[in-house]
Image: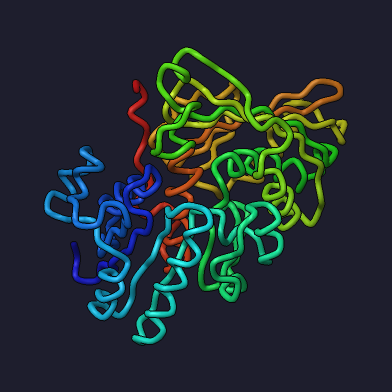
Length: 354
């Protein structure tokens, strides 16, 4: 830890996304863990929940939110990242930010839950069927995939959902460059970690292993999120028809996005246009061949491929749902909010043979 390293509070500390936050913080050259907050595991060693993180956090324990707040006076600047559940994250962030304001401490917050993905409490409550935990804070957050927002105009940020991130990475350049009609069909498969750490019928190993099944077809709650964020990025509204699937693997999302062509450009020219859209994006690669999950698992990279026939354009996108689709994308926002390169602490490559 260097002398100028900034401490981080991780909220929701014992879940899968929190584990990724902790892993990424451990390898970040300008950040260190200040407090990992877990209501259910306060007082337990971090290594009890995340054995793979013992080399980085051998002696550190999860703490309560009150203990984390009491530590705020230890430094003048903090980062708070939240992996707390939808519906709980906003209230926790509100406690941290209010306490920091009272103590004259600067806190930069990034939320990986759904609580700050919409600009109004009414939009959020219509989708998640629960009152928003901090409606007065909504104006201080903005949500976007990092590659789709050039300038930040809020002090805090929110990361889109994992499915939403994959769909947005594929669809936004098509809309922005007028390559397709604004009406998309999406089929996407996610790994079991996307369902969180609490075992359920659809995540139980005997059900998931060697199996593939759809769920919430055409009614998944990421649909309004993707439509809202696409319009924010491009100025154009879209139709979206999304069928998610549960896959027999732990990490990753493979999304296939289809839309009617709106250009006479060749398939190669359409591919080049998408690549040009991401020309300055270190973490997004447009490939000549369909992408594979194993090439990006464990990383913050997104690999895309583009195909077209006479009537349709298709984009395949693969991301790690826990990294680029959650903690990694959020850490990109942390870097940018603090004036650092997006890539700081995030350029690790995939082990490949997982």
